[in-house]
Length: 506
Image 1 (spheres, one colour):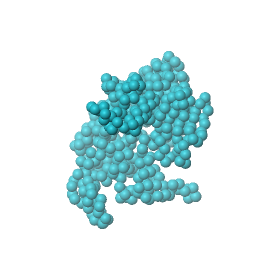
Image 2: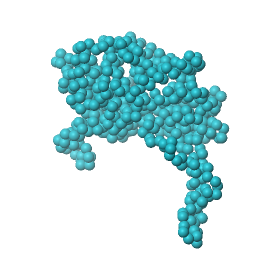
Image 3: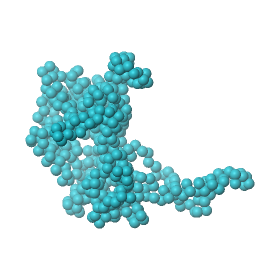
């Protein structure tokens, strides 16, 4: 029985021995991970945990029940099977399927240790809550209490609105140093008397007769206008476009105390899960790299090779037009390791025009292993692809852009151009594939309306999702909501007011 409230079996003596063996191999390769506790679960339990994002103690909501139903049907019909699951906590908890055979359990354990090493050492996970199990349990207690007090349907309806807005956070915000409460607020200058503000911009002088030369009228007027613009910006709420829409709502919307607490819970959990979306390719690639290395070089018995190869190949298979993070991640780590072992980087290599020379290039530097550990530490998926995806890699694995041909009923290559392929892949990864939305004005037209801005990057907003998001925003903001976007190079304003959605070009 686990301390977190679900039934599980202790590891058998055989599995304890396998765990200790795999852990020793992982440490021998230099992996550095939190203590990892393996729990044995059946398919119903692991489907339930997956529906809750890996946390059996999470707050109740119908969405999690719907996800569980889909996972259960997928398992029942043989369409999908979850072999393992691991959560980013200290200690880390990993769930093993009871139905797995020994070679699968070995592979899963090696894979898990790769994940936990990534959780512990990757920069983008450094701000996450390592005690999230306890935090999730506290969240669940609070929400159940609110359901008892205000009614389950009322609370669930409000959670629906919050979950609709869940993507509207700023994943980079935890890495930005915020002003301490005891630091002076530089916006105080806007409250200074007019006679003081009028002197802003003048350079100090020791001789009054020099004033006309040191502070000419044009210069003083320019500085006054600059100060005026700064003061207006400081009075605006927010002063600058704010990407964390949930934080703006928490600080400014007319919510009841329990609603503010629920929104805060949804926001906290969104930030906890954000790094997983930012590092999906890297994280799965890293875990796959190490389970492959440990199994093929250390842990496999001769009788297990075929089963391992079959399951490993199934994990890495990639269909045309789709990105398999396991496949792209593991192969890119291997490519980096090979390039840095052979010295295939730097100015001399990049400027070499002879393809045969580049193919045979080998400085025997042996820096590959060190390099991939460095990459694991500092990168996220965007920087991983931007920095290390090469034209040779794209050609080798046929990472072209594809389009579906309805006439032939199959995917066909649409573009082989490396720059376009890389650009499209980076576009899919930027902001976890979500549109970039910023709050620009909490008092639009001086009517208390909310104005947001969609930073257009070549892809139009999906009107269906925009309507649902704006409806949820309006229900929380209690006033009309507007979004500035762009269609075919022309500015467009989407508005939601009194249950009606409208669009007009500006």
